[in-house]
Image 1 (cartoon, helix red, strand yellow):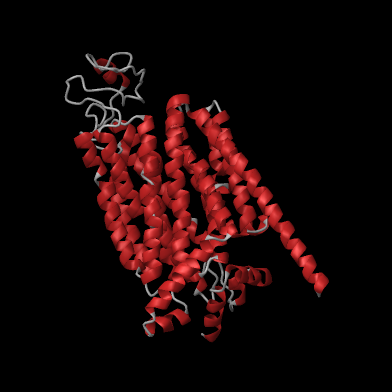
Image 2 (cartoon, rainbow, N blue to C red):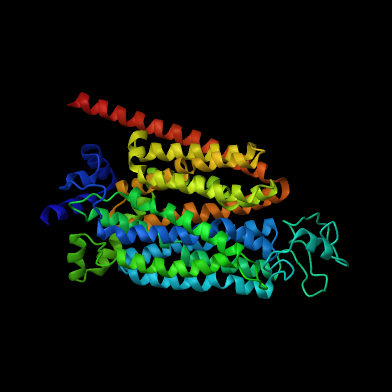
Length: 520
C-alpha cells in the first residue's frame, strides 16, 4: 500500500514532472508490480466498463446518424436540421465543465450519473411526442409516404395548392417546405417546430454529453488503482463498437417494422434510447462502486475538514492546466478535429440519400466503421506507441479526417464511401484513444474529470455546434460535395500547423538536451 500511495502522489505532480516520469519509465503502470495474465483471464472489476461502453455507444450511435432523418420526416429543412443538431450542443458546452466541476469538487459521481440518466430519458424520449404536436402530419407518419402519395398531395414543384410564398423544388426527400393541403398544417421557416426541437436538443445534450466522459474517467481511475494488472483503456473502449453494430442494426430493423402510427417510423430509435440508457446507468454505477478520486493526501485533508484549501487548490491547478501552451494547442486541435469529423457522421446519410445510394450501402457504411473500431480500440495503445506517442498520433488522426472528407467529396459512386468509412479506425478511434492518453499523461488527478469532460465537450459539443450550423447551410445551398471539400480544406491547414508545432517542440527539446549534456 505504501508503494501505491507513493506512486499516486508522484502522478499528481506537475505535468512537466509527469513527462519526465514517462520518459524514464515509459508509462506509469510499468512501475507497478504486475503478474502474468492470459487474454482469457477475465478482470471482473472492469466488466462494468465494457458493458457501459457497449450500451453508451449503442444508445447514441443510432441517434447520431438517424436523428437528421427523423427531423426531416417531421418537417424541418436541411438548414434547420443543421442548426438544431449544431446549436443543440450548447447544452454539452455547459454540461462538460458543469458536471465535471461538481464531480471533482464533491466526488459525487454516482449521484450525478443518476441525474444525467433521468434527464436524458425525459428530454430525448419526449421528441416523438412533441413532433405529433408541432410536426408536419403529412410526412410525420409510419409508414413513410411514398412518391406517388406525395405527388397526389402536392404540386410537381413541391408546393401545396393555394400555398403562398412557396418556391421550393423539393422532392420526396425534401418535403419540409410544404404545407398540408387541408390547411391543418402550414410550414413556416424557423417556426414553432424549429424552436421546440432546438431547445429540446439543447436539454438532451446537457444531460447526455458527460455520460461517456464519466465512464472514461472511471476506467482511467480503475487503471491507476490496479497495482497487479494493467488495464488498457482501448481494450475496454472497443466494446463500444459492438454496441454500434448491434444497436444500429436493431434500430433499422425496428424502424422498418414499426407499426402504423401518426408518428414517423424513426420513433423506434427513441424507444431503444430509453431502454439502453437505463441499462447503461446500471453498468456505470457498478463501475464507480467503491471508486475513490482522492489521493491519500486528499483523503486525509477531507478527514480533517480542510475544505477551503482544497477548493483553492482545485481552482489553482485547473487554471494552471488550462493556461499551458501545450494544453491550449491540444484543445484547439480537438476543436478542429471535431469540426471535420461532425459532417462525416451527422450528414453522411443525407449525402448518400441524395446520391440515391441503396439501403445496403447505408448498412455497410456502419459495418465498415464499427468493425474497424473493434480492432482499432483493441490495438490502439500499440498503434500509438508505433507512431511515436500521443501527440504524433493525434496529428496522424487529423490527417486521416482530412483524407476522409476529401474522399467523400470526390466520389460519384456511393459504394466507394465504404473505403473512407473503413478509415474511421485511423481517424476517430485513434483520436479518442490518443487524446485520452495525452490527458492521462499530463493532467493532474485533481482536475482529471473536469479536463476529460472539457475535452469531450469540445470534440462532441462546441465543434459539432459550429460545424453542423455551417455544414447545414453549405449543404442546403451548394450540396454535400462542396460541404465535405470545405471541411477537408480546414483539416489540411490545421494538419500543417500541428506538424510544424510538433517539429518545433522536438527541436527545442533536443537543444535543451544538448545544453544539459554540455553542462554536465
